[in-house]
Image (cartoon, rainbow, N blue to C red):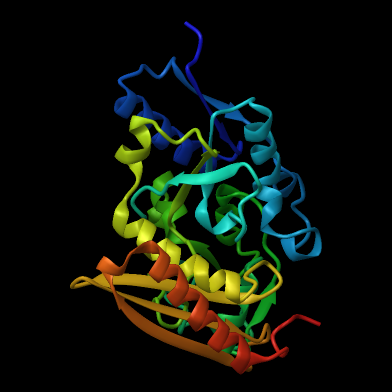
Length: 309
């Protein structure tokens, strides 16, 4: 039986786990079998380059570019991305059709020898490739030695277990989806470690004009989509990429959305933050506008002090 829907995905264990979840949900929404909704594995430039920070070789778009090209070429019908990897602007002809319910947005602290971030000894080696996590960690602990850590989750966990680092930081969502929560020593606070815009959420991307399907309504989670609209609005204003240390997180409570966004100096010596609230009924466009406004306020406060040298 020929597939009816082809889902493009990166080849990592986490990407395949996430895409497999979406494959099953889309098949159920469309009343199709898994043989009719297939995964198409695509190796991205970001997956091939493991020895440098992404900001040195082109940014987060390296995780989406080849998959988006497959969508535009008609080789796949849906792309599944981690939302925090999706660039601020959509390529012409493509759209984010659905945003499923978000996983845990927090960062996780992982260490062989230490129970918590605060317990790390003076001068401890902290592994991360994220400029945001680096800046937030140094804002709290300027004595830490930040060391570059790339690779898939299993590779990073193994290096931490082998003692190559005193600790590493990873997104809780990925560990949850892979069933690797036993490695977590501490879940870091959303205040001290404000997540990347979109962290913990997935993006289902399609061609424009190809969104009139049952799976779109079934998988789109309105509250998550609203929060992501606010966070991505802030990201646009802050030019959020791998070259800037940017955090943004929106919380919905009692029919109100509260967005907090920040930018940090890469060495953690300065931190600029703003927060704002709007009514949920105002919708995604208003949430995006709130994000843009708060992001602009942070950008004005920070000036040009935040780019790495």
